[in-house]
Image 1: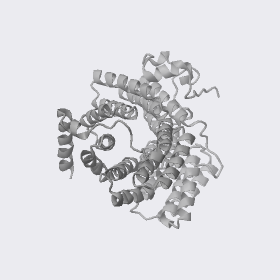
Image 2 (image 1 turned 90 degrees about the vertical axis):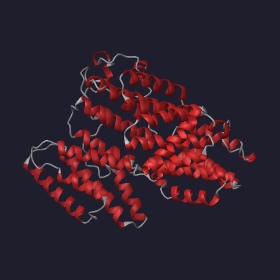
Image 3 (image 1 turned 120 degrees about the horizontal axis):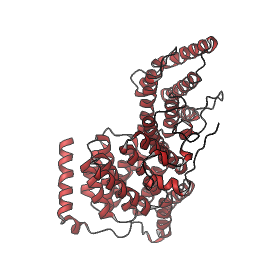
Image 4 (image 1 turned 45 degrees about the vertical axis):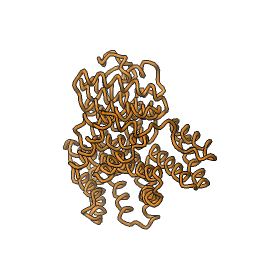
Length: 468
C-alpha cells in the first residue's frame, strides 16, 4: 500500500496550507495529502490502520468504562458500556464485507446476540436508544451503509456531548469506514474536523493537526469555504493549546478577515471566539472580552451561543466583573448544552465563589465538579485543578493548595499543556505569599463606565430574561 501520512510537526508547506498561504486549488497541494498523487481521501488518513481485528481489546475505551462502572457497582451504566462494545465489534465484523454464506450466517448470529443484550437495557436511556438505532440500521444483505453511517455519527456526537472523547473517536472511525476506501471529499472534511476537535480536546496535538490539514485539503477540493476556514481555526486551536498564542491569534484574525469578505457570520463568530481565547491567554483581557461579545452577537446557533457565553462569562470573571459574569455563566450552567460546556461554567462559578470569599458556595461548586472529574478532558482537568488550588489558597488552606497545584503542574507537563504549565509554575512560586490572583486586573468601576461595557451588560441581562 503506497499511502503516506504526514505528521503534525510536518514541513513548512503543510503549515502554510493550514494558515492560508497555499492556493485553494487542490492540484497544487503537497502530494503527501493524497493517495499516490490523486485526491483520494481515506479513513486511514484520520485514524491510521483501522482494519477489523480479532483482538478482543479492540474498542478498549468501552471496556474500560464498563470496568470502572462495575467497580462502582453501577450495573446499568456498566451494561450500557458493554453494549457499546458489542455493537462496535458487530459493526467491525460487518465492515469486513465478506459475502460468503458462512460469514453472513455468523453475522446474523452475532446481531441476534447483541440485540438480546440490548433488550435488557432500560429503553428510556438515551445511549440505549442510540445503540438500538445502530443495530436496527445494520443491513443484512448488499444494501448500502448510508443509514448505518447516520446512526453511528449521531452516536459519536452523543458521546462527545457526554465528554466520552476516546469512545467518540472509536465510533467516528467506524462511521467513516462505512464509505470504504474512497470517502467523498465533503464528508471526509466534516469527519476530519470532528476527529481534529476530539484529538485536540484530548491534547493529542500531532493527531489533531494532521486531521485539520486533511480537512482543509478535502474541503478545498469540495469547494466548501466554510469547512476550509473552520479547519484553519482548528490549527489555531492547536497552536493555542501548545502555547503559541501569537500565532494562534494571527491565524484566527486571518480567518476572520476571510469570513468577513465572504459574509460567513457563523465563521466570523468562531474566529472572534478563538481570538478572544488567545487574547485572554496573553493577558489582554479587556480586548478578549470585547472579541467574545462580538462572537456572541454573530452566532445564531444555540449550542455555539452557549459555548461563547461560557467563555464570555469566564473573561468577565477574570476582569473582576463578577455580577455580569454570573449572569452569563448561570445561563450556561442551566442550559441543555453538552457536558464540556456546562462543566466549564460550573468550574468558573466555583472560581467566582472563591474570588468573592463565599466558602460554602465554593465547596458546593467544588463538590459538583469533583463528581465528574473522571470525565474531564486534559485541558478542563487542568483548569479545574488550577482554580481549585487558587481557591483553597484564598481560603488559607495553603498545604492543600500546593498539593492540588503540583498535581496540575504534573498533568500539564505530561499532556504538553504549555500555557497551563507556566500558570501553575508561576502560582506555585508565589504561594508562600499567597499571591494567587492573576496580575494586572483592571478596576471594575473604571470599566463599568465604558459605553461598550454598559452595552454588553445590558445585552446579557436582556438575553438572560429572554431565556429564563
